[in-house]
Image (tube, rainbow, N blue to C red; front, top):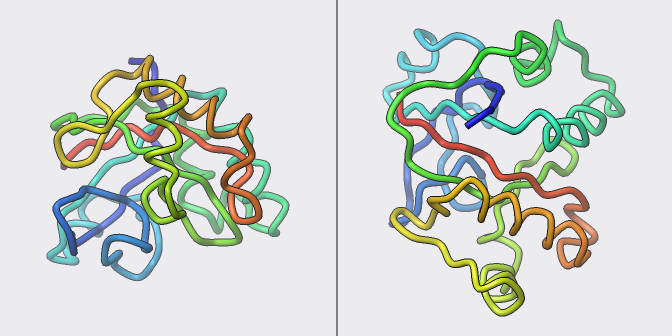
Length: 163
């Protein structure tokens, strides 16, 4: 796996699925943490999130276009550091960024079924995709399909690591 860390999300599950999206999980402060110690102080589960560099590029462009920079955005500063995520690997979640909100393929009606019908790729344990190749293929298909419009245009396979 060649992923770069985008930082930490402090989350509390509200279903059987593991997610970094505030649409399907309670996310502490609706924000990202640069520092693992601070994220752990929330009392929530801490997930470190990793993206393939090429899938991170559209996300970085969107965050920069909103006026954020490496000083003000934990995601931008962590990606720029180029560190690899670590912890217990849980799987990949298909996510997209929209004006400060992180959406998952689970929160935009029917996308899990659309991906399954088009690619045969299905989520496994915790509602996550276990194979990096399958997750990246599903993210590419979802981006090309345009089915996340108008909320998400670029989808990425986010590797989730329990810290």
